[in-house]
Image (tube, rainbow, N blue to C red):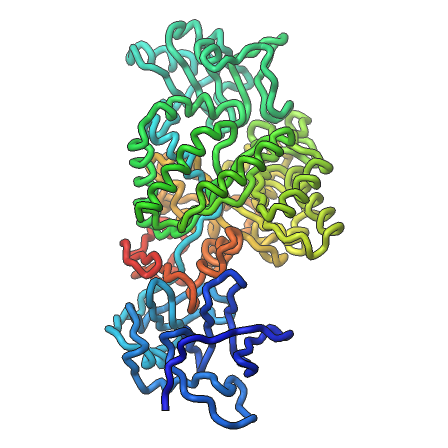
Length: 640
């Protein structure tokens, strides 16, 4: 005889097994935290994982004190040859090749969805417990929704509303005079623009530099801005300096890292790092209407759905919190209108130790004001150092070409104090760490705090980018619990640039993600691109391809970049496809703290999944960047 269970009380015994009314269920799994909804998910028979709730039908408990492994008094043993209408599912899929990202059950062939959640994942035999139309996927590849764990949603929206790319005309030249000639010619052909925007790789200047006087001579009455190709410095003319109140007396945000370049005590019009530049680059974005920001965000949402990105960490905007918050207001509004299907993990950005107090205050305010169903703000973001090609990445060993060491934004004492405060407040920490010394400082800081606090240190700490690391630090992430975030589409470049920066041996030891992964650390992947443009670099399958090949080839879906006929060293740092998939799914969910809801195809989690006609596990690595999902489901709703 069958009885419907209306309410079940669940406790945990000392061995973390679930206890219902004194009866212990040995095969319980996926227990949610104390704040989760009162539902329990059980591994019942075979590979079936089914929701035990008010909709579940159970046999009455047998009156016996002995039971076989995997069963217990009061537990359910589904008769898999019997379909029951009271277990109706919204979607049932069979004959699929499912990569679950669930370590205990990595593959499956069938799943069922109800009310936006997976209620079954396993083999096809278990589907007999559910009523509903069964879709035959004919061997199609299914994987969890993708989580991009370091993007710039707010900054990208800013660039979008000020122009197609926001960067302006790209200057390719021979020396400083060639750059100035290009600028003069463009301005002559396009008179009357409010601001002339250009982009220039500093290498083309061949050691020379551009000053405000150079730009004033070309355009005394208009605004001229040149963004350096690394996205970490700009040159401007006197009119822009005056507009933003930048005089010789202005203080550098972080001397040696984020600063205004001076000559003989006078600002030259060049400035380094986002704390100085982004409020200038994006200033006109504040004048745009909300509708323009909404349109930019809709472009990002449409792209994300198209490639199957279901969650992101937004890494924010340094030095321009006003526009950062304005975009968060629009994201909140879109979510309240039911127009934000993508989970956005937000942050507040600081650039120095002196910004900590105000940054924490603002972060907690953001948390109160902008947390919605699909948006949570709980992370402080810090730019610890700069970038390698501008010699602002912090080094353990000096740059070979200049002898410089770069600079960190904090010292160890300041970092330890901040980590303790974040831990007390229950706030997470995400840190830009490009150079050897920046990631070492992060590891040293966490090590010291963990030594003092032990298991009471609970926050997530993410070290992002990790372009170059000292070999001694590669195995420190796992025991310290620091998450390593890499941007794999960067993992192909001109090796001669780096051997010039670091010497022959050290310059061939960049992006050692495989070593960090193999040490047991949690590694996550990201796209880290600051402008939307055509979203080419936001493509997660581009990241997968280059992460596996460390090479851009004619087959790669990326235009306008230089091709090199070698694998970017070290060759043994190439990743496998399963590692790429895990880093883009369950590992990303763990970084964002949403692994109980997203990141894998498991009963009880949001039904976020992608369907492909190509098996990504066996697909050719070169050209994988062209792959797109045929279908994309967000909480069980088909959006593509």
